[in-house]
Length: 621
Image 1: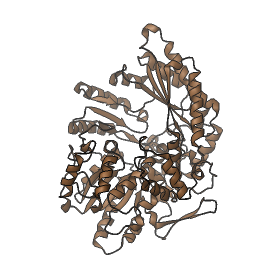
Image 2: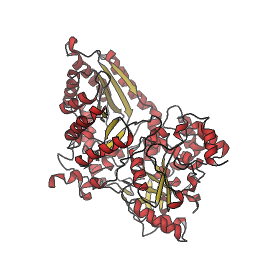
Image 3: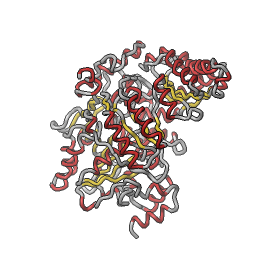
Protein backbone atom coordinates (compact mmCIF):
# COMPACT_ATOMS: atom_id res chain seq x y z
CA UNK A 1 0.00 0.00 0.00
CA UNK A 2 1.51 3.33 -0.97
CA UNK A 3 1.87 6.18 1.46
CA UNK A 4 -1.03 8.19 0.06
CA UNK A 5 -3.51 5.31 0.44
CA UNK A 6 -2.24 4.50 3.91
CA UNK A 7 -2.55 8.14 4.89
CA UNK A 8 -6.14 8.31 3.66
CA UNK A 9 -7.04 5.26 5.69
CA UNK A 10 -5.49 6.65 8.85
CA UNK A 11 -6.86 10.16 8.41
CA UNK A 12 -10.40 8.82 8.76
CA UNK A 13 -9.59 8.12 12.42
CA UNK A 14 -8.12 11.49 13.46
CA UNK A 15 -9.52 14.89 14.36
CA UNK A 16 -10.03 17.29 11.45
CA UNK A 17 -8.55 15.21 8.59
CA UNK A 18 -8.87 18.17 6.19
CA UNK A 19 -5.69 19.50 7.83
CA UNK A 20 -3.67 16.89 5.93
CA UNK A 21 -5.22 16.32 2.51
CA UNK A 22 -4.20 19.41 0.50
CA UNK A 23 -5.98 20.14 -2.82
CA UNK A 24 -7.31 23.48 -1.61
CA UNK A 25 -8.33 26.24 -4.02
CA UNK A 26 -5.23 27.90 -5.56
CA UNK A 27 -2.87 25.13 -4.41
CA UNK A 28 0.05 24.89 -6.84
CA UNK A 29 0.43 21.64 -8.78
CA UNK A 30 3.64 20.76 -10.61
CA UNK A 31 5.40 17.66 -11.85
CA UNK A 32 8.06 16.98 -9.19
CA UNK A 33 10.24 15.27 -11.79
CA UNK A 34 10.33 18.43 -13.91
CA UNK A 35 11.99 20.69 -11.29
CA UNK A 36 15.52 20.94 -9.94
CA UNK A 37 14.61 21.85 -6.36
CA UNK A 38 11.82 20.62 -4.11
CA UNK A 39 11.18 22.86 -1.11
CA UNK A 40 8.99 21.84 1.84
CA UNK A 41 7.74 25.02 3.50
CA UNK A 42 6.89 24.33 7.14
CA UNK A 43 5.02 26.17 9.87
CA UNK A 44 5.67 24.23 13.11
CA UNK A 45 2.14 24.44 14.46
CA UNK A 46 -1.26 23.07 13.56
CA UNK A 47 -2.66 23.73 10.05
CA UNK A 48 -5.21 26.32 11.20
CA UNK A 49 -2.44 28.50 12.63
CA UNK A 50 0.08 27.98 9.86
CA UNK A 51 -2.36 28.66 7.04
CA UNK A 52 -2.94 32.11 8.51
CA UNK A 53 0.70 33.15 8.18
CA UNK A 54 1.28 35.74 5.44
CA UNK A 55 5.03 35.16 5.16
CA UNK A 56 4.59 31.55 4.06
CA UNK A 57 1.98 32.56 1.49
CA UNK A 58 4.44 35.12 0.03
CA UNK A 59 7.35 32.67 -0.21
CA UNK A 60 5.12 29.84 -1.48
CA UNK A 61 3.94 32.07 -4.32
CA UNK A 62 7.42 33.46 -5.01
CA UNK A 63 9.15 30.07 -5.12
CA UNK A 64 6.46 28.44 -7.24
CA UNK A 65 6.73 31.17 -9.89
CA UNK A 66 10.16 29.72 -10.63
CA UNK A 67 10.09 26.90 -13.17
CA UNK A 68 12.94 25.08 -11.41
CA UNK A 69 11.37 24.98 -7.91
CA UNK A 70 8.32 23.21 -6.52
CA UNK A 71 7.37 24.53 -3.09
CA UNK A 72 4.96 22.44 -1.00
CA UNK A 73 3.61 22.86 2.53
CA UNK A 74 3.85 20.93 5.78
CA UNK A 75 2.45 21.66 9.23
CA UNK A 76 2.72 19.99 12.63
CA UNK A 77 0.45 16.95 12.92
CA UNK A 78 -1.94 17.23 15.86
CA UNK A 79 -1.01 14.87 18.76
CA UNK A 80 -3.51 12.20 17.66
CA UNK A 81 -1.87 11.79 14.24
CA UNK A 82 1.60 12.30 15.73
CA UNK A 83 1.06 9.21 17.88
CA UNK A 84 -0.06 7.09 14.94
CA UNK A 85 2.84 8.23 12.74
CA UNK A 86 5.36 7.39 15.45
CA UNK A 87 3.85 3.98 16.16
CA UNK A 88 3.59 2.99 12.51
CA UNK A 89 6.78 4.72 11.35
CA UNK A 90 4.93 6.77 8.73
CA UNK A 91 7.19 9.57 7.45
CA UNK A 92 5.79 13.10 7.51
CA UNK A 93 4.55 14.19 4.09
CA UNK A 94 3.88 17.44 2.24
CA UNK A 95 0.30 18.40 1.41
CA UNK A 96 0.67 18.97 -2.32
CA UNK A 97 2.04 15.55 -3.37
CA UNK A 98 1.69 13.57 -0.12
CA UNK A 99 5.36 12.61 -0.59
CA UNK A 100 7.88 12.29 2.23
CA UNK A 101 9.53 15.48 3.43
CA UNK A 102 12.81 13.58 3.88
CA UNK A 103 13.01 13.25 0.07
CA UNK A 104 12.91 17.01 -0.53
CA UNK A 105 15.94 19.21 -1.16
CA UNK A 106 15.04 21.85 1.44
CA UNK A 107 12.95 21.87 4.57
CA UNK A 108 12.26 25.53 5.34
CA UNK A 109 10.83 26.24 8.78
CA UNK A 110 9.38 29.63 9.69
CA UNK A 111 9.97 30.37 13.37
CA UNK A 112 7.50 32.90 14.74
CA UNK A 113 7.33 32.03 18.44
CA UNK A 114 9.75 30.44 20.89
CA UNK A 115 7.14 28.11 22.34
CA UNK A 116 6.99 26.29 18.98
CA UNK A 117 10.59 25.07 19.32
CA UNK A 118 9.61 21.55 20.42
CA UNK A 119 7.41 21.30 17.33
CA UNK A 120 10.49 21.92 15.18
CA UNK A 121 11.96 18.73 16.63
CA UNK A 122 8.62 16.99 16.03
CA UNK A 123 8.80 17.94 12.34
CA UNK A 124 12.37 16.65 12.01
CA UNK A 125 11.62 13.46 13.92
CA UNK A 126 8.44 12.58 12.02
CA UNK A 127 10.24 13.39 8.76
CA UNK A 128 12.89 10.83 9.79
CA UNK A 129 15.60 13.47 9.45
CA UNK A 130 18.35 13.40 12.12
CA UNK A 131 17.59 16.01 14.78
CA UNK A 132 21.18 17.27 14.87
CA UNK A 133 22.53 18.96 11.76
CA UNK A 134 25.94 17.36 12.42
CA UNK A 135 24.41 13.89 11.87
CA UNK A 136 22.96 14.63 8.42
CA UNK A 137 24.43 13.55 5.10
CA UNK A 138 24.04 14.59 1.49
CA UNK A 139 20.95 12.37 1.37
CA UNK A 140 19.04 14.61 3.76
CA UNK A 141 17.28 17.94 3.03
CA UNK A 142 18.98 21.21 3.88
CA UNK A 143 17.08 22.43 6.95
CA UNK A 144 16.79 26.22 6.93
CA UNK A 145 15.01 28.49 9.40
CA UNK A 146 13.59 31.98 8.95
CA UNK A 147 11.34 34.45 10.77
CA UNK A 148 11.67 36.74 13.79
CA UNK A 149 13.05 34.09 16.16
CA UNK A 150 16.12 33.74 13.96
CA UNK A 151 17.33 37.06 15.38
CA UNK A 152 18.59 34.81 18.15
CA UNK A 153 18.85 31.36 16.55
CA UNK A 154 21.37 29.99 19.04
CA UNK A 155 19.06 27.87 21.26
CA UNK A 156 18.05 25.89 18.15
CA UNK A 157 21.32 26.25 16.21
CA UNK A 158 22.30 22.58 16.52
CA UNK A 159 19.12 21.48 14.71
CA UNK A 160 19.51 23.68 11.62
CA UNK A 161 21.89 23.64 8.70
CA UNK A 162 21.18 27.26 7.81
CA UNK A 163 19.22 30.28 8.97
CA UNK A 164 18.02 33.12 6.76
CA UNK A 165 18.29 36.45 8.56
CA UNK A 166 15.91 39.06 7.18
CA UNK A 167 13.21 39.22 4.52
CA UNK A 168 13.07 36.18 2.26
CA UNK A 169 12.64 38.03 -1.04
CA UNK A 170 16.36 38.87 -1.33
CA UNK A 171 18.87 36.00 -1.13
CA UNK A 172 17.02 32.79 -2.02
CA UNK A 173 17.95 33.08 -5.72
CA UNK A 174 21.63 32.91 -4.80
CA UNK A 175 21.02 30.02 -2.39
CA UNK A 176 19.09 28.01 -4.97
CA UNK A 177 21.81 28.62 -7.59
CA UNK A 178 24.41 27.34 -5.14
CA UNK A 179 22.31 24.28 -4.34
CA UNK A 180 21.97 23.33 -8.00
CA UNK A 181 25.74 23.53 -8.25
CA UNK A 182 25.97 21.33 -5.13
CA UNK A 183 23.71 18.74 -6.75
CA UNK A 184 25.98 18.48 -9.79
CA UNK A 185 29.38 18.73 -8.12
CA UNK A 186 31.11 16.20 -5.88
CA UNK A 187 31.75 18.41 -2.87
CA UNK A 188 30.45 17.61 0.61
CA UNK A 189 27.48 18.86 2.59
CA UNK A 190 29.90 20.72 4.86
CA UNK A 191 31.44 22.47 1.88
CA UNK A 192 27.95 23.48 0.70
CA UNK A 193 27.26 25.03 4.11
CA UNK A 194 30.65 26.78 3.97
CA UNK A 195 29.83 28.32 0.59
CA UNK A 196 26.26 29.16 1.66
CA UNK A 197 27.62 31.10 4.64
CA UNK A 198 29.14 33.59 2.18
CA UNK A 199 25.70 34.52 0.81
CA UNK A 200 24.36 37.74 2.42
CA UNK A 201 21.90 36.97 5.20
CA UNK A 202 22.74 33.26 5.44
CA UNK A 203 23.97 31.95 8.79
CA UNK A 204 25.42 28.43 8.96
CA UNK A 205 25.83 27.57 12.67
CA UNK A 206 28.37 24.80 12.06
CA UNK A 207 30.68 27.34 10.47
CA UNK A 208 31.00 29.30 13.74
CA UNK A 209 32.38 28.43 17.15
CA UNK A 210 31.55 29.76 20.62
CA UNK A 211 33.71 29.95 23.74
CA UNK A 212 32.61 30.82 27.28
CA UNK A 213 34.00 32.50 30.39
CA UNK A 214 34.01 30.56 33.66
CA UNK A 215 30.93 32.54 34.79
CA UNK A 216 28.95 31.16 31.83
CA UNK A 217 28.92 34.33 29.72
CA UNK A 218 30.18 34.24 26.14
CA UNK A 219 33.89 34.94 25.67
CA UNK A 220 33.95 34.90 21.87
CA UNK A 221 31.86 34.00 18.84
CA UNK A 222 33.98 33.55 15.72
CA UNK A 223 33.75 32.08 12.22
CA UNK A 224 35.83 28.97 11.56
CA UNK A 225 37.01 30.27 8.18
CA UNK A 226 38.40 33.63 7.12
CA UNK A 227 36.11 33.90 4.10
CA UNK A 228 32.96 33.81 6.25
CA UNK A 229 31.69 37.12 7.67
CA UNK A 230 31.97 37.70 11.40
CA UNK A 231 28.65 39.59 11.18
CA UNK A 232 25.62 38.23 9.32
CA UNK A 233 23.69 41.17 7.87
CA UNK A 234 19.90 41.05 7.72
CA UNK A 235 18.42 41.26 4.25
CA UNK A 236 15.70 43.79 3.64
CA UNK A 237 13.52 44.65 0.64
CA UNK A 238 13.51 48.40 0.05
CA UNK A 239 11.53 48.63 -3.22
CA UNK A 240 8.10 47.65 -1.93
CA UNK A 241 6.45 48.32 -5.31
CA UNK A 242 8.48 45.40 -6.67
CA UNK A 243 7.77 43.08 -3.75
CA UNK A 244 6.29 39.70 -4.76
CA UNK A 245 2.82 39.24 -3.32
CA UNK A 246 0.36 36.37 -3.84
CA UNK A 247 -2.77 37.42 -5.72
CA UNK A 248 -4.06 33.83 -5.57
CA UNK A 249 -3.48 32.75 -1.97
CA UNK A 250 -4.51 29.25 -0.97
CA UNK A 251 -8.06 29.00 0.39
CA UNK A 252 -8.36 26.31 3.09
CA UNK A 253 -11.25 23.85 3.28
CA UNK A 254 -11.70 24.46 7.00
CA UNK A 255 -11.94 27.58 9.12
CA UNK A 256 -8.50 28.87 10.09
CA UNK A 257 -7.37 31.55 12.53
CA UNK A 258 -7.31 34.31 9.92
CA UNK A 259 -10.12 33.30 7.59
CA UNK A 260 -9.79 36.24 5.22
CA UNK A 261 -7.49 37.77 2.63
CA UNK A 262 -4.69 39.97 3.90
CA UNK A 263 -3.45 43.20 2.35
CA UNK A 264 0.03 44.18 3.57
CA UNK A 265 0.23 47.99 3.50
CA UNK A 266 3.73 48.57 4.87
CA UNK A 267 6.66 47.04 6.73
CA UNK A 268 8.38 48.44 9.77
CA UNK A 269 7.17 50.87 12.43
CA UNK A 270 8.06 54.46 13.25
CA UNK A 271 7.09 54.33 16.93
CA UNK A 272 10.19 53.05 18.74
CA UNK A 273 8.51 51.27 21.66
CA UNK A 274 11.47 49.99 23.68
CA UNK A 275 9.99 46.57 24.44
CA UNK A 276 9.03 45.79 20.83
CA UNK A 277 11.41 43.59 18.85
CA UNK A 278 9.43 43.82 15.60
CA UNK A 279 9.57 47.60 15.71
CA UNK A 280 13.37 47.42 15.77
CA UNK A 281 14.29 44.53 13.47
CA UNK A 282 11.92 45.52 10.65
CA UNK A 283 13.25 49.08 10.34
CA UNK A 284 13.06 51.22 8.31
CA UNK A 285 9.35 51.72 7.68
CA UNK A 286 8.55 51.14 4.00
CA UNK A 287 5.13 51.83 2.51
CA UNK A 288 3.41 50.20 -0.43
CA UNK A 289 1.93 52.28 -3.23
CA UNK A 290 -1.76 52.88 -2.63
CA UNK A 291 -2.76 52.32 -6.27
CA UNK A 292 -0.97 48.97 -6.24
CA UNK A 293 -2.81 48.06 -3.04
CA UNK A 294 -6.15 48.82 -4.66
CA UNK A 295 -5.37 46.51 -7.58
CA UNK A 296 -4.15 43.78 -5.23
CA UNK A 297 -7.34 44.02 -3.18
CA UNK A 298 -9.41 43.44 -6.33
CA UNK A 299 -7.34 40.41 -7.31
CA UNK A 300 -7.32 38.85 -3.83
CA UNK A 301 -11.09 38.95 -3.46
CA UNK A 302 -11.73 37.79 -7.05
CA UNK A 303 -9.34 34.83 -6.78
CA UNK A 304 -10.38 33.53 -3.36
CA UNK A 305 -14.07 34.17 -2.87
CA UNK A 306 -13.34 35.43 0.64
CA UNK A 307 -15.84 37.85 2.11
CA UNK A 308 -13.41 39.72 4.34
CA UNK A 309 -10.23 41.69 3.76
CA UNK A 310 -7.81 42.71 6.49
CA UNK A 311 -5.06 45.32 6.45
CA UNK A 312 -1.71 44.14 7.75
CA UNK A 313 1.21 46.06 9.25
CA UNK A 314 2.82 46.74 12.61
CA UNK A 315 1.10 50.14 12.86
CA UNK A 316 -1.57 50.61 10.22
CA UNK A 317 -2.53 54.04 11.57
CA UNK A 318 0.87 55.31 10.43
CA UNK A 319 0.34 54.37 6.78
CA UNK A 320 0.32 57.79 5.12
CA UNK A 321 -2.39 56.92 2.54
CA UNK A 322 -4.67 55.08 4.97
CA UNK A 323 -7.63 57.42 4.57
CA UNK A 324 -7.58 57.14 0.78
CA UNK A 325 -7.21 53.36 0.93
CA UNK A 326 -10.01 52.90 3.46
CA UNK A 327 -12.41 55.12 1.53
CA UNK A 328 -11.71 53.05 -1.59
CA UNK A 329 -12.23 49.70 0.16
CA UNK A 330 -15.47 50.84 1.77
CA UNK A 331 -16.92 52.41 -1.39
CA UNK A 332 -15.85 49.52 -3.63
CA UNK A 333 -16.43 46.39 -1.60
CA UNK A 334 -19.01 46.98 1.10
CA UNK A 335 -21.81 46.99 -1.46
CA UNK A 336 -20.54 43.51 -2.39
CA UNK A 337 -21.00 42.52 1.28
CA UNK A 338 -17.26 42.26 1.88
CA UNK A 339 -16.25 42.95 5.46
CA UNK A 340 -13.20 45.09 6.13
CA UNK A 341 -11.25 44.25 9.29
CA UNK A 342 -8.67 46.50 10.84
CA UNK A 343 -5.82 45.80 13.21
CA UNK A 344 -5.58 47.85 16.36
CA UNK A 345 -5.67 51.51 15.34
CA UNK A 346 -4.94 54.65 17.27
CA UNK A 347 -8.33 55.74 18.52
CA UNK A 348 -8.88 59.14 16.94
CA UNK A 349 -11.76 60.82 15.12
CA UNK A 350 -10.77 59.38 11.71
CA UNK A 351 -10.35 55.84 13.00
CA UNK A 352 -13.69 55.94 14.80
CA UNK A 353 -15.41 57.25 11.70
CA UNK A 354 -13.97 54.36 9.67
CA UNK A 355 -14.85 51.79 12.32
CA UNK A 356 -18.40 53.11 12.41
CA UNK A 357 -18.62 52.17 8.74
CA UNK A 358 -17.03 48.73 8.96
CA UNK A 359 -18.11 47.41 12.37
CA UNK A 360 -21.34 46.57 14.11
CA UNK A 361 -20.72 48.61 17.25
CA UNK A 362 -23.30 46.62 19.20
CA UNK A 363 -21.16 43.49 18.87
CA UNK A 364 -17.60 44.74 18.60
CA UNK A 365 -15.17 46.15 21.10
CA UNK A 366 -12.42 48.70 20.72
CA UNK A 367 -8.84 47.86 21.61
CA UNK A 368 -6.38 50.16 23.33
CA UNK A 369 -2.81 49.10 24.13
CA UNK A 370 -1.51 51.56 26.74
CA UNK A 371 0.98 48.83 27.84
CA UNK A 372 1.51 50.61 31.19
CA UNK A 373 -0.83 52.09 33.77
CA UNK A 374 1.01 55.32 34.59
CA UNK A 375 2.48 58.09 32.52
CA UNK A 376 5.88 57.54 34.12
CA UNK A 377 5.90 53.94 32.97
CA UNK A 378 4.65 54.79 29.48
CA UNK A 379 7.55 57.23 29.18
CA UNK A 380 9.98 54.51 30.24
CA UNK A 381 8.80 52.21 27.45
CA UNK A 382 8.49 55.10 24.96
CA UNK A 383 4.86 54.29 24.27
CA UNK A 384 4.02 57.83 23.20
CA UNK A 385 0.50 57.78 24.68
CA UNK A 386 -0.70 60.22 27.30
CA UNK A 387 -3.54 59.55 29.70
CA UNK A 388 -5.34 62.52 28.20
CA UNK A 389 -5.20 61.00 24.70
CA UNK A 390 -6.37 57.61 26.00
CA UNK A 391 -9.36 59.13 27.81
CA UNK A 392 -10.14 61.39 24.88
CA UNK A 393 -10.13 58.43 22.48
CA UNK A 394 -12.30 56.36 24.81
CA UNK A 395 -14.68 59.27 25.21
CA UNK A 396 -15.09 59.68 21.46
CA UNK A 397 -15.75 55.96 21.18
CA UNK A 398 -18.37 56.00 23.93
CA UNK A 399 -20.05 59.05 22.41
CA UNK A 400 -20.12 57.15 19.11
CA UNK A 401 -21.99 54.20 20.61
CA UNK A 402 -19.32 51.75 21.73
CA UNK A 403 -19.50 50.35 25.23
CA UNK A 404 -16.87 47.57 25.13
CA UNK A 405 -13.18 48.30 25.53
CA UNK A 406 -10.19 45.94 25.68
CA UNK A 407 -7.02 47.22 27.35
CA UNK A 408 -3.64 45.52 26.97
CA UNK A 409 -0.80 45.99 29.46
CA UNK A 410 2.52 44.43 30.45
CA UNK A 411 3.73 43.62 33.93
CA UNK A 412 7.36 43.27 35.00
CA UNK A 413 8.69 46.10 32.85
CA UNK A 414 12.02 47.71 33.84
CA UNK A 415 11.75 50.18 36.78
CA UNK A 416 8.14 49.10 37.47
CA UNK A 417 6.78 50.03 40.92
CA UNK A 418 3.65 49.03 42.80
CA UNK A 419 2.16 52.40 41.87
CA UNK A 420 2.59 51.49 38.19
CA UNK A 421 0.79 48.18 38.77
CA UNK A 422 -2.10 49.83 40.58
CA UNK A 423 -2.20 52.45 37.86
CA UNK A 424 -3.52 49.81 35.46
CA UNK A 425 -6.70 49.41 37.49
CA UNK A 426 -6.96 53.15 38.07
CA UNK A 427 -6.74 53.91 34.35
CA UNK A 428 -9.46 51.35 33.62
CA UNK A 429 -11.65 52.99 36.24
CA UNK A 430 -11.10 56.44 34.71
CA UNK A 431 -12.23 55.07 31.36
CA UNK A 432 -15.35 53.65 32.99
CA UNK A 433 -16.01 57.00 34.68
CA UNK A 434 -15.84 58.65 31.27
CA UNK A 435 -18.52 56.24 30.00
CA UNK A 436 -20.90 56.95 32.85
CA UNK A 437 -20.62 60.69 32.22
CA UNK A 438 -22.83 60.06 29.20
CA UNK A 439 -26.52 60.64 30.08
CA UNK A 440 -28.17 57.32 30.88
CA UNK A 441 -30.68 57.56 28.06
CA UNK A 442 -27.85 57.95 25.52
CA UNK A 443 -25.72 55.01 26.71
CA UNK A 444 -25.48 51.80 24.71
CA UNK A 445 -26.03 49.44 27.64
CA UNK A 446 -23.58 48.63 30.41
CA UNK A 447 -19.89 49.53 30.07
CA UNK A 448 -17.58 46.49 29.70
CA UNK A 449 -13.85 46.98 30.16
CA UNK A 450 -11.56 43.98 29.86
CA UNK A 451 -7.98 44.31 31.12
CA UNK A 452 -5.41 41.79 29.89
CA UNK A 453 -1.84 41.72 31.15
CA UNK A 454 1.05 39.78 29.72
CA UNK A 455 4.41 39.49 31.44
CA UNK A 456 7.39 41.29 29.96
CA UNK A 457 10.09 39.39 28.05
CA UNK A 458 13.22 41.39 27.12
CA UNK A 459 13.83 40.42 23.49
CA UNK A 460 17.06 40.63 21.46
CA UNK A 461 17.70 43.83 19.51
CA UNK A 462 15.53 45.99 21.75
CA UNK A 463 16.72 48.64 24.21
CA UNK A 464 15.50 46.30 26.96
CA UNK A 465 17.79 43.43 25.90
CA UNK A 466 19.95 44.26 28.92
CA UNK A 467 17.00 44.09 31.35
CA UNK A 468 16.31 41.29 33.81
CA UNK A 469 13.18 39.19 34.09
CA UNK A 470 11.44 37.88 37.21
CA UNK A 471 10.48 34.44 38.40
CA UNK A 472 7.02 32.91 38.20
CA UNK A 473 5.95 33.84 41.73
CA UNK A 474 7.05 37.45 41.30
CA UNK A 475 5.04 37.81 38.10
CA UNK A 476 1.96 36.28 39.70
CA UNK A 477 2.45 38.57 42.70
CA UNK A 478 2.29 41.55 40.37
CA UNK A 479 -0.89 40.22 38.78
CA UNK A 480 -2.35 39.82 42.28
CA UNK A 481 -1.63 43.49 43.04
CA UNK A 482 -3.48 44.53 39.87
CA UNK A 483 -6.37 42.20 40.69
CA UNK A 484 -6.70 43.67 44.18
CA UNK A 485 -6.53 47.18 42.77
CA UNK A 486 -9.33 46.36 40.30
CA UNK A 487 -11.53 45.15 43.17
CA UNK A 488 -10.95 48.46 44.96
CA UNK A 489 -12.24 50.61 42.09
CA UNK A 490 -15.67 52.26 42.24
CA UNK A 491 -16.56 50.83 38.82
CA UNK A 492 -15.18 47.35 39.52
CA UNK A 493 -18.36 45.67 38.24
CA UNK A 494 -17.59 47.10 34.79
CA UNK A 495 -14.00 45.81 34.80
CA UNK A 496 -12.81 42.27 34.10
CA UNK A 497 -9.17 41.25 34.54
CA UNK A 498 -7.22 38.44 32.83
CA UNK A 499 -3.52 37.62 33.00
CA UNK A 500 -1.21 35.27 31.13
CA UNK A 501 0.59 32.15 32.31
CA UNK A 502 3.71 33.17 34.23
CA UNK A 503 5.70 29.95 33.82
CA UNK A 504 5.26 30.14 30.04
CA UNK A 505 6.63 33.70 30.10
CA UNK A 506 9.74 32.67 32.02
CA UNK A 507 10.40 29.84 29.59
CA UNK A 508 9.83 32.14 26.62
CA UNK A 509 12.48 34.45 28.08
CA UNK A 510 14.98 31.59 28.44
CA UNK A 511 14.45 30.49 24.84
CA UNK A 512 14.50 34.07 23.49
CA UNK A 513 17.72 35.00 25.28
CA UNK A 514 19.48 31.63 25.45
CA UNK A 515 22.69 30.38 23.85
CA UNK A 516 23.61 27.09 22.18
CA UNK A 517 23.70 25.23 25.47
CA UNK A 518 19.89 25.48 25.68
CA UNK A 519 19.54 23.13 22.70
CA UNK A 520 20.36 20.01 24.72
CA UNK A 521 17.55 20.77 27.17
CA UNK A 522 15.16 21.43 24.29
CA UNK A 523 16.00 18.05 22.81
CA UNK A 524 15.48 16.40 26.20
CA UNK A 525 12.03 18.00 26.55
CA UNK A 526 11.04 16.55 23.19
CA UNK A 527 12.31 13.13 24.25
CA UNK A 528 10.12 13.43 27.35
CA UNK A 529 7.05 14.01 25.15
CA UNK A 530 6.98 17.78 24.81
CA UNK A 531 5.14 19.11 21.76
CA UNK A 532 2.66 21.96 21.21
CA UNK A 533 4.06 23.93 24.16
CA UNK A 534 2.31 27.02 22.78
CA UNK A 535 -1.00 25.33 23.65
CA UNK A 536 -2.05 25.49 27.31
CA UNK A 537 -3.53 21.99 27.29
CA UNK A 538 -0.18 20.45 26.28
CA UNK A 539 2.31 22.66 28.10
CA UNK A 540 4.03 20.96 31.03
CA UNK A 541 6.44 23.19 32.94
CA UNK A 542 7.68 20.28 35.08
CA UNK A 543 9.02 18.62 31.95
CA UNK A 544 11.17 21.69 31.26
CA UNK A 545 12.37 21.92 34.87
CA UNK A 546 13.43 18.28 34.72
CA UNK A 547 15.22 18.75 31.40
CA UNK A 548 17.17 21.79 32.62
CA UNK A 549 18.23 19.89 35.73
CA UNK A 550 19.32 16.79 33.77
CA UNK A 551 21.37 18.95 31.41
CA UNK A 552 22.99 20.97 34.20
CA UNK A 553 21.46 24.26 33.03
CA UNK A 554 20.53 27.03 35.47
CA UNK A 555 17.50 28.80 33.94
CA UNK A 556 17.99 31.80 36.23
CA UNK A 557 21.27 32.58 34.45
CA UNK A 558 19.27 33.62 31.39
CA UNK A 559 16.54 35.59 33.15
CA UNK A 560 17.34 36.71 36.69
CA UNK A 561 20.04 39.28 36.05
CA UNK A 562 20.48 42.62 34.35
CA UNK A 563 23.22 42.34 31.74
CA UNK A 564 26.22 44.70 31.78
CA UNK A 565 26.50 46.86 28.68
CA UNK A 566 29.68 45.13 27.51
CA UNK A 567 28.43 41.54 27.79
CA UNK A 568 28.50 39.57 24.53
CA UNK A 569 25.00 38.40 23.68
CA UNK A 570 24.37 35.13 21.82
CA UNK A 571 22.87 37.20 18.99
CA UNK A 572 25.63 39.81 18.67
CA UNK A 573 26.97 38.19 15.48
CA UNK A 574 23.83 39.41 13.67
CA UNK A 575 23.63 42.88 12.18
CA UNK A 576 19.92 43.65 12.51
CA UNK A 577 20.19 47.15 11.08
CA UNK A 578 19.92 49.01 14.40
CA UNK A 579 23.19 49.77 16.14
CA UNK A 580 24.14 48.56 19.61
CA UNK A 581 25.02 52.18 20.46
CA UNK A 582 21.47 53.29 19.63
CA UNK A 583 19.95 50.51 21.70
CA UNK A 584 22.22 51.33 24.67
CA UNK A 585 21.31 55.00 24.37
CA UNK A 586 17.61 54.13 24.42
CA UNK A 587 18.18 51.83 27.44
CA UNK A 588 19.61 54.78 29.35
CA UNK A 589 16.78 57.08 28.21
CA UNK A 590 14.33 54.44 29.49
CA UNK A 591 15.99 54.48 32.92
CA UNK A 592 15.78 58.28 32.87
CA UNK A 593 12.12 58.19 31.77
CA UNK A 594 12.87 60.25 28.66
CA UNK A 595 10.66 59.92 25.57
CA UNK A 596 12.24 59.67 22.10
CA UNK A 597 10.18 61.16 19.24
CA UNK A 598 8.99 58.82 16.49
CA UNK A 599 10.89 58.47 13.22
CA UNK A 600 8.73 60.93 11.30
CA UNK A 601 9.12 63.59 13.96
CA UNK A 602 12.87 63.29 14.46
CA UNK A 603 15.54 60.79 13.41
CA UNK A 604 17.05 59.02 16.42
CA UNK A 605 20.12 57.77 14.54
CA UNK A 606 19.27 54.09 14.96
CA UNK A 607 21.36 53.03 11.97
CA UNK A 608 18.55 52.11 9.57
CA UNK A 609 19.23 55.13 7.35
CA UNK A 610 22.02 53.15 5.69
CA UNK A 611 19.37 51.15 3.84
CA UNK A 612 18.80 54.28 1.75
CA UNK A 613 15.05 54.46 1.71
CA UNK A 614 11.74 54.24 3.50
CA UNK A 615 10.71 56.70 6.17
CA UNK A 616 14.37 57.67 6.68
CA UNK A 617 14.37 59.38 3.29
CA UNK A 618 10.73 60.20 2.59
CA UNK A 619 11.14 63.89 3.41
CA UNK A 620 14.12 64.22 1.08
CA UNK A 621 12.16 63.41 -2.07
